[in-house]
Length: 542
Ligand code: NAD
Image 1 (cartoon, helix red, strand yellow):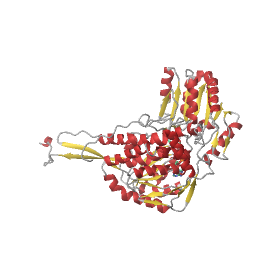
Image 2 (tube, helix red, strand yellow; image 1 turned 120 degrees about the vertical axis):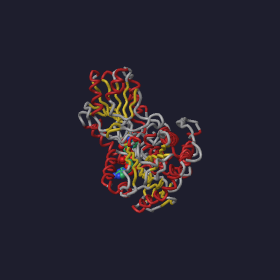
Image 3 (cartoon, helix red, strand yellow; image 1 turned 30 degrees about the vertical axis):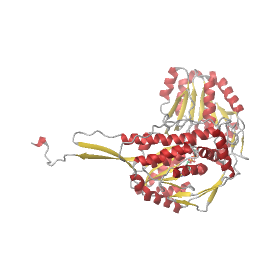
Image 4 (cartoon, helix red, strand yellow; image 1 turned 45 degrees about the horizontal axis):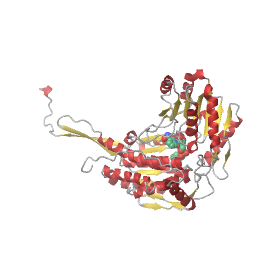
């Protein structure tokens, strides 16, 4: 603590820019997009003060134009990972001892850099790397990352402010120490904001970090590194390595100084990580903190009292924005028979109004490409199977083409089996499966919603009947960490809807909340007694 109880600037959500035709932000981002698209970036590993080019490189291509190369990144070998850990440990004490307001200032400055001079860069990089249309890039890479940084600084100061009472003659105080060791951040492809937040939230609390971004997000991860560097983050606080996730992870988890993992990605990978940590438990100097936000099979359930047009819009936005590649995307829907025809007609009409999937550079495209060939092939396989199965029917979309980009048409599968495979399995793409129930079976349907999936991330109920809303809120209590009433199940905003799910969807440490930051500290209680006793005898002994 410096010489004052400093108040941090009040965090407010970053306003979303419109990018409407004729706006300066639209021109700026398109210019940056073209510059990146026609350029060639060479992304090194960032370890300590070094930018390491290993010579073992992998090309980077936009998912919507996969034969076009926009640069390359250098792949780490085991020695680089060890070096990243060593740099963490060498940087730890200076960073951990820095006064909190100096750490706060680095991340507040990063937020302002994103809001200003880096906004077009981080958005254009996200459009290229992850094939997001400009609106999806803006709400993720610019606004959500800014919000994470600003709100987490505010939460950090609130945490430090939490102090115990002190009885007469003593003073109790708690200091929130960073963990003793280093943190391993593993980030997914789908949100630039998550990629920035997982290492930053731990670092903000005074920790040092080895960060492994997703191979499919390195292009935009590099902009995050540029921003943190310009914001003045000291070398060695966040060390960045890419490459074989298994080798990198084995090396990191073998270190006795491994103190915690901050993961977002798929459920299977997280469960394997947990197992590896368990197997190594006797190696570690401290019990590692394990934080993971993972998969989802998110639902929309409409009650017969719902308004059909609202349900249709929730389905179209909730299932298809960013090609359904949000962990919160609606992918199983339950419609009452009395409304189903009207809702499905409206959904089909909306889908017919989309352009064919294409490049985000064409701003009239709502739907762009899915992330990579593996994802494309998986989605195509499930769509083909649905076309063959007797208990399923593809009623919209169903076409795909990977000749130029990994394009999958927004697809609606109607099933007569509420446990049909695509009602249960996370596909992570623009495919939604719909089951129509008899209106009289509403309460039974809620049990189906609760019991169908191993996940419990997000879900939405649409209804006008307040008793139905109440019944669903209770019945669906454990199957969504983020529950929406009369809204789509996506679009959580930092500072307003802290995000995370339970069951197989993660440890629910709510990204963008004080609860998450608390995982990255180890409180030390200090009790000071002002007049220290000098006689062991208590009065009762007399
Ligand atoms: P992924 O699990 O394939 O990859 C995530 C990260 O783990 C990447 O950095 C990847 O390289 C790494 N990884 C992969 N295999 C590994 C291994 N064996 N050991 C160590 N690391 C490994 O996930 P993805 O495709 O990047 O992202 C999509 C998934 O993330 C979906 O399941 C989605 O639901 C989930 N997700 C969840 C949330 C949430 O908040 N719950 C948010 C975003 C994404």
